[in-house]
Image (tube, rainbow, N blue to C red; front, side, top):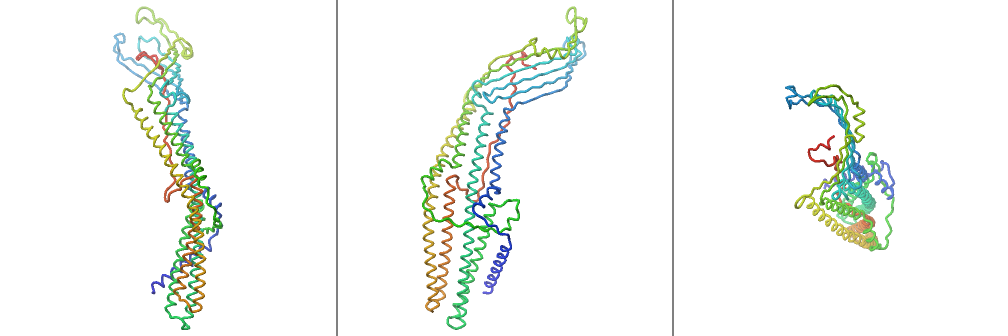
Length: 541
């Protein structure tokens, strides 16, 4: 008995402390619209999804990098000493020193997957070779080349496929954000009405406690007067202790509900908002007629964000099938190039037989070497077709078969999602109807329980009833009032769910909003060189 009294006193002290703390905290009157606005602006989970749009936008920019012109340049010096290859050179090694440089630009075209390149190179070479015609010699060259696929990669290639997928993923990210907004708003509304119901439950529990305390006071007077046995007073005081405990639990549930709502709408940078006292001022919705479920199903099938995202996934799957089907074709490419060369430096003039005697020199400057590269003095051009095709079942054929199966899987998932959506909306519509009927029934039950308690009180005052019956009537009223609050909360939740499921699926408890994206691979355009007979040296720079 002493232990129970100690627990009651400690519980009462905690209630008083909690009440005082809430009274001293700043009160924020919160409408449902204000709560939704705060959540959309501040909710960190929603901010993560919003940033996902920016991530996918940058992935689109990454995929565009495949079509960006690529500039490359190299400058260097080399020295090579080789053993003499003829007796004319004696035993001394041949020393060749080079200063060289090359600069070029190449780019993959957005249409047709063609690749063009333009490059210029220059080299200055000095050598101790006695049979050399120039020392030093200066060479320059200008090369233009173009490679065009005719079958594989012409309609769609890896770079364009990657760009197409990235663009759709960007649109999918926007749909995912809109879906997350709907889910977050629904969660805020559910938390708002739950908090509202827990506050009402505190009032009901407080009223029930006051009724029990009033009965205990009256019983004490009657016990002191000898009208009723002391057991009735003990029974009444025990009921007071139990209802005080219920009030403590109600306050704890309200504090938890308040924090659940606060978490959804709080600005993470505003730490003081945790100390503010939220006061929901919105009134519950009046009971409405059953909504048009068939119209709601049509709206959901046409506008649900998850169905729209699934449709984007199907388009991605179709694009992948198209790309891999194209990759099964022979790789046939038209290759063409042109190179103009120039030569300059100090030329040795010789007479007599090979290797001849040097009788003079003639200088050709750097301008001669550069100018000849743009003339037809030393042209080298090529035009040809390259063909490659795997023999037997290729990797591309197997990949295409896999992609086709995956496309069929996405199609079936969409069909399943449409059925699930229709069933979900219809169930949500029926929930509104059933909870509305439950509210009417619960309200009638609460009214009758209140009338019964009044009747039992009158009989008790007249000495025709007992403490047990009055206490039981009070319990029945408390249960009926709590049940009415729960059914009203269920009705508000049903309205919120019905509104939300027409646009998005509910967010499962404990789940997080998923953010996904495709990895973008850097696709550097290769350098086309034209086609030359192997060993001819026509394509060198």
